[in-house]
Image 1: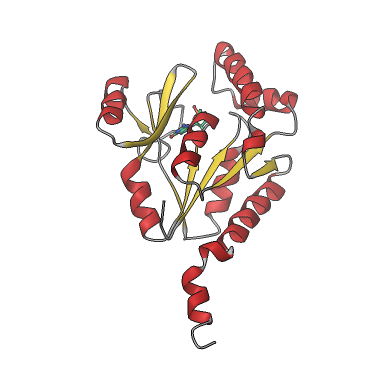
Image 2: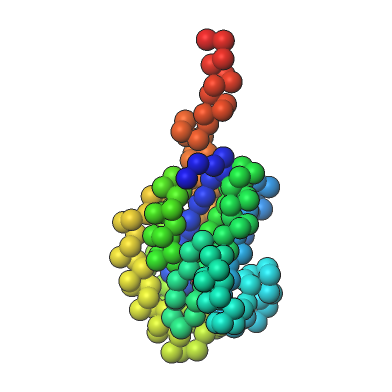
Length: 203
Ligand code: 5GP
């Protein structure tokens, strides 16, 4: 697909710290926008509708799919998650760097649609660290923690399909690495055709 903006897909197991890394990355640039996903999951304490997610009923979600309003979607555990299409298209057209924080199945679908997207996988240093983080977070019941750990094992097998992997051991390093990846990708010749033709105009 042809556009001026850049699409960044960021995945990582639940508890890998993607949200914390991303919130730090967003502070550093006005050019980055985060797509707000739609989900059928219930809000966690402190989560706000229209900020963290659009929290909707399953019926609403399934209708949005039928109406072609979702760019991608996936079932994760017992809930649906998906990216509304229209805002992403608009941001890309206006030259923004759009970040989709989505799980591996959605990432695979986005790669098929946007072959020039940049994919980053954020991983914890180990499964035991992940388990500790999920328990410390205290937002899920035991059954859901076990399900998320099992899903994490499947997700970690998919790292090889991503362009970059960032190990979230120390937050500052992970943030710097994600910022560096985005910057390097933006500077690629293939993304700078307009600037290059300007520079080389009278050559
Ligand atoms: P959580 O319930 O922890 O907020 O999210 C569960 C998983 O769903 C995470 O891996 C998260 O990145 C993923 N996710 C969130 N939004 C979307 C989305 O729009 N599409 C897809 N495919 N996955 C999403």
